[in-house]
Image (cartoon, rainbow, N blue to C red):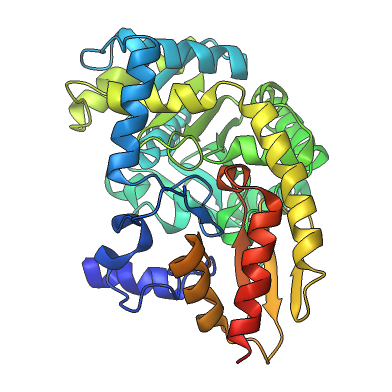
Length: 393
């Protein structure tokens, strides 16, 4: 299992293992080794801050000192309920519930939305189809039908075509009940789906009595770059899952939002699948802390990133480009004269700035996040300027 995950990370298009650590062991990733200086890492690898254990504990202490953390018990009450209530406000849904993982959130939504129907249509490049170990088939007896192979996202025409094809070519009808959309799309380098595309699919699903689930693990990032509010995105779906650790910096956890008919059944499902834990406040307290002001924060991240990238693009040999319908992931390409490994090692060793590996096309997936707000832009740019000089020696 360890080797499989290591190989996945090495091959992943997001290129998450940086040059700055010579070993490819998961135990040698940068967030497992704390720097001795006081600087918060500026990482161009993850969606969030990648807090170290001591930083995480320190943040919990700060939160608790500001207002004593009220613990939950088996997911009920306390800070966990406050987080759930906040997500009800943000999404406009009737209910919200904490789950230990995003996989469980996606799978339970699919199971309950689909009822006795056996088929679920999912994006071919989605987390549900690629990364959840065939849970829908193995645990919930649901058959996933992939759609949009080779495309960043599918459209209404694709959906109609695959429904028609499936209907015409199956002798024994078993029923299609649910469509899944992922937004933004991790395997498409964080691409967000145009809102008109979502509106068309949502309208079609309502007209044909199909339920619609959103894997919105990173939905606030899509909101920041598309200028579409979370409450609008959520309005087109029956259920929506949001991660608590991608950019909300918790050590784990997920939130699933939807109507009472579905969400009120979730706690029992969590229990029978062994997902109920005694307390979750250590995750929900941190997530709630970083959730407050999330829209303004990501607006600032976007504007700051624009300025930073403009400055870095003025350095000789540096090219950073945004993607079509892109979010916080950009394509970084260095000239042949710049040794990427030397640059990455210098930035890490001298400035605690993290940079990832290049893919087979020589492109580094340059990811921006809240960490760029922790340093002056001039300091970051100067570090790159010096690092590039050293990387050309």
